[in-house]
Amino acid sequence: MSGSPVVVGVDGSQTSVAAARWAGAVAEKIGTGLHIVHVEPSLGRNLADSAAAIAAAAMSYRRDAVEILLKEASEAVRADLPALVITTESVDGPVDKALIEAGGAARMVVLGGDGPAPLVALLTGSATVSTASHAPCPVVAWRGSRQPDGERAVVVGFDFTPAAEAALSNAFMFADTLKVPLRVVYSWPMRVPAAPVSIPFLIDWEALEAAEWVRLTEVVDRRSKSYPGVSTQCFIEPAGPAKALAMHGSDAQLVVVGTRERSVLAGALLGSTSMNLLQHSKIPVMICRPGVTPRNDGEDGPAGR
Image (cartoon, rainbow, N blue to C red):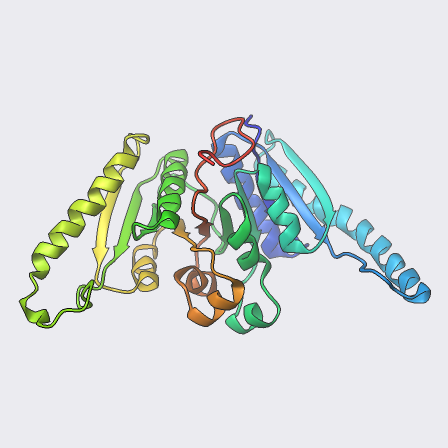
């Protein structure tokens, strides 16, 4: 078993238990263990004596409940995968900080739940968005109801940025682990010139598209040499990234995107591709920060960092 487990955050909901089962299936295919984490909110500081006593009693009750929910989550996973090594832990919050720290020694962090509404992300922050923006490993926002399988493809969005390079590396790793095809989707609206031009109808768009095909396939071919068993297709779509990924991900099992480390506020206001997918995707979404590449067995941190 690898020294870097798959980490999954649970909160007692059925959605988080389903996410734990999905994470367990991924861990089993990778050949590592599963670490189930529940985060307890902290008591805070400078409470009055009476308030502190009430809060302490409430926290004591919650800790008893946490043991039960951690047991339920681990038993649900063990029912699917009796031989999988499963560990559990309850830590004090905030949630995003605890999960970011847990991701320091993880292959990936998995979170279950409904997509965060932009207003909620703007006003209160989202554990998923914050964790994905800062974790030192890929973060998966679990969606849907299916378990990983050896048939449906993995889809990755690519745009030649460092974040997209990280997404491509992790998408190849995941596709290779599951023995499924990989679809690389490059959003390139041809109606919008790459730079201002005075006579746009004189642009040789076919030549530009051919050059983009060469550029894309060269990058993908270099990466595929490390994963010769992965069947790969490349697509250049004249549509926005979210729309292009939704089209190619309709029958897939995972969509992988990079994040440029915008803040929660910027993500909510600007409607980035990752925020759009978190809001609307019906399948799991893996979010990768620049430089976060797949970890080899036994590593304690991101490869190449």
